[in-house]
Amino acid sequence: MNKLLCILCLVGLAACHRKSDYDQVLKDPNLYCRTVYQLNSVVMGNNFSPIVASRNYMYAAIAGYEVVAAGYPERFRSLAGQIYELPAIPAPAAGQPLSVELASLLAYCRLGESVTFPEGSMREYVDSLKKLASDHGMPSEVLSNSVAYADTVSAVILAWSRKDNYAQTRSASQYTVKDEPGRWVPTPPAYSRAMEPHWNELRTLVVDSVRQFMPAPPYPFNITDKKSDYYQEVVKIERAVDSLTPEQAWIADFWDDNPFKLNVSGHLMFGTKKFSPGGHWMSITGIAALKSGADFPTTAYAYAKTAIALYDAFIECWNVKYTYNTVRPETVIDKYLNPNWRPHLQTPPFPEYTCGHCTISAACAEALTSTFGDNFAYTDTTELEFGIRSRSYKSFREAAAENELARFYGGLHFYYSCIRSNAFGKEVGAYVTGKLHMKK
Image (cartoon, rainbow, N blue to C red):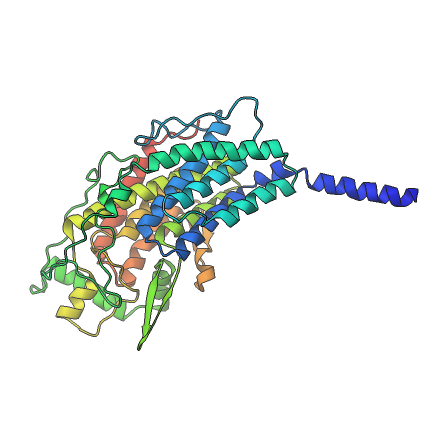
């Protein structure tokens, strides 16, 4: 009987030991990456556009980071005073023990959901985080204090988010389609209306204005003069798509990032989903954080900086798009050269110049380079779940440079537009990262 009692006591002690490691479990940076992946999946599942998705990632990442900055003031600075109109974030209450990491995760989820989604979209995942903490021995007081602080920070960020003019643009006038030479019109197969024509009216974070970075104007539309720059670009993309090598097609597919591709077969129509361009770069951020061995706070910092660069780059790019309203290659080639021509990828519903993916990729690459350094080699496994083989890069900038070619190979953007867009995005990203002073 005494022997059995000893065994039971040892089992009980072992169980208690297993359940007292909540601090170690919650400080695992992979948990932050999994939380970002969860938001990425919810964004994809709800069919949000890449532009709207960037807003979700940004507010969520800032909320998660602000908790970390408050919890590790010796290492990180708040973004209050560094990005427009963000008020001071309350510090945790003295004498009330909490888990900074759990509060950071909860704040991330709250903002990721609240700025766009219907309430409850991430409730099940949030409940699983709380259960994880409890199952690993977090005292009820620590858990309640962590939840309360996450709610405090979330309330501040959420109130700030509501002043960014997003709600007002929901009822703004739609893009006026005009069948004029060189002007954007909807493209097959969905012929969707122009996406987010008023995105340049949203509040920026770090850049001073939507016109702070303006690339040179696009080539003048000229499809009659075969010696014109414009005509040469049209022929160049037509020929490139018609003669893609397997490697070029792989590159185009890898960076497709179409959040909702409409597939049409006779009378049958169905959609297939992937992560958006911004979601792809959020995934790359997690890959880099884990490969570098970054701890939890540094991981939250990396996501926040990248998400801020992503968001401002989208605003700058969308201002250029709806300044010039340029026609897509597919429309030009079908009308003037070959009515049966189709791009390799499905054309998204907004003007051609400048390339959004090239712009935000270059901006994100600058943010990640400033965090993890140049010549940071990694393998991007983001697309495996969508049936596309991984690709490896010697640096984030090399990946962004490949994206230039990807949008050209895909038949979505003229070559010169891709080149200019990369330079444009790099300029935005360098400015954002140069202005932010998040680490001490």
